[in-house]
Image (cartoon, rainbow, N blue to C red):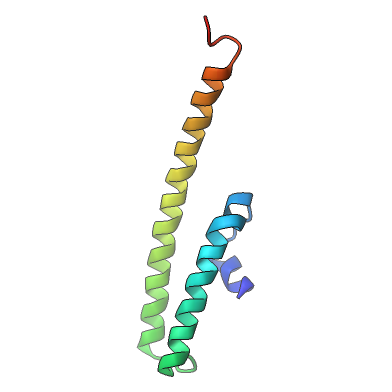
Length: 90
């Protein structure tokens, strides 16, 4: 499963290792267990293809959300640096 996550989400920064990759692993396990329960895991049917498309859409939305989170975190860091800088009192 680690190879699957690597192909979907190649970033290995601390944030991704701590949060994103764990969440993706959970969803991949859940989807694979759901396919095994319905007996569709070994078949190459349309259900698997639609699940892969759904996962791809969710991953794209997750990537966009993380990019927005990174930008807002950078803004917060900049504000904190401005407030704690030596010239902030001037």
